[in-house]
Length: 197
Image 1 (cartoon, rainbow, N blue to C red):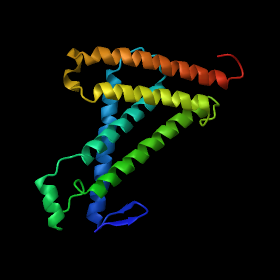
Image 2: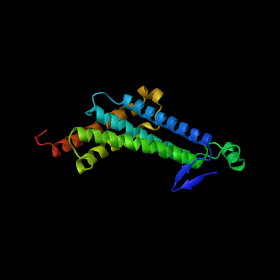
Image 3: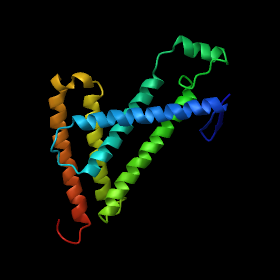
Image 4: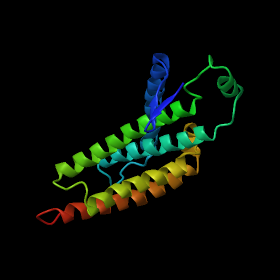
């Protein structure tokens, strides 16, 4: 039913292919929407530029996708999944582990490409080679900020966030890490600026 060529997922039929593509688009929208909801909860006045906030949202989406993939791998065995293994006429792309890996791989590649493109545009606009130590340090600072925010917010109930103690924790962590991103950006710009910044 499933062909593997160098770990390439080959759907057995057109219907399964469409289902995998549709689930990939849904997952992409879901993780980007979740990331944007977190960006909207960040305190105002952070020392970050709009391009950096966009890159942060992409890293948040990437982190959310990774956690959803890990949760799906550890999902409990259901009656439907057991029946699908026994009865070949009950296949479900959502339950098929190979299809699920293909869905997550597709979204992961799309997010990674968007991150590379956004970082590349920022660096090119400032005449900075994107694969240099200062540029990588700046990118890592944004990624670390996303991971820290995700750790705080992954268990939070966003509907009751205004009265949650996590709101203050998020504000403190975001301000400290935004300052670190700002410092890395300044160091990167100074390293490649002909005049003092």
